[in-house]
Length: 471
Image (cartoon, rainbow, N blue to C red):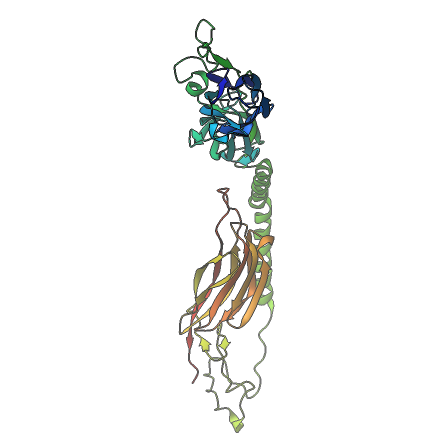
């Protein structure tokens, strides 16, 4: 004697989000009253139920229960064929357990979730975007972005061109929108576009056997409807996400710059046509009047005891009476000479224009410094300093010359900053001009990708002169 159980269908087909049912008939061939526990085993157990899950039978009787399959519409219900078993376990005679089996086919469905970031970009020629895609279907799919724009003003390029995603997997593609030509003058232009994200046409339109994705042939009849099978077809059509984007193209030369250039040209023309001739005429008249006044003034009478005109002047210290003139014996540096403490005197006429660039790269959250050292035997008169923060970094910049701090400025308050001095800042020999940078957050340069480190440039200009040691 044994326990007999039989499923109503040898094979079932069910779509995620749908329901398929079959029957299970249990017969008691024993000579005692027996209770049977019915348990689903296999890959389909998570979404399969038996109603009722326990039956009691008299000897020689049978009962039919309902087996209900309801896979969720999610990546957890993978597409494919899976075995389904129902364990029929007698309570009194557990050694007579039996497991009837069938095959369940879960049909595939495609569902994508996509997003475009940022939605709006500004630039002179091109804009870069990120397309994030997630496969919410239950079958692997190859995703292809299809950009479109009304007109032929933009060209697009996707990297990579296609992306394969497993069920539940996410990925990212980069999209570049490029204008066909530059806008040199005038107003900015706005180019809206759309990006359709979906599977490749070959994968979406055809099945593995060359039939349509709905499993039907050219005559409209199903190819999977076989005797002894239960089918639940997914009626939901494939929805391809449609993403909206926009590229705002900026002109190379804005309108206000053209107006400024026109005003400068008008001022130059006015200077050369009106102001410059008037100034030259006034200067010429003033010079002629000064010459006429000097010619009309009589020469002063010679002072008694003063040397006659043309008489050589005695050397310093040879004056009558042994008295020195005021200021005699004091050293003079002459025109352009300066007394640099501890370094001697600057030699007049040796000054040459010189400039140096200090390049400082600083890691995020740290500080670093760059410096320029004045050569030995030289003195550097700084007249101009230009600081460049071309990435838009955030942090602190401190500029020192020798032991003197010139300035301390926050990086986020400028992109280019220049300083000029009428009275130069003197840096003695062997001293350094130092740029110390504390990096709080690297900025984003024109490429659109945030930099890994802070990067500042400091250009110092002035006169580099020789020095003469003191006696």
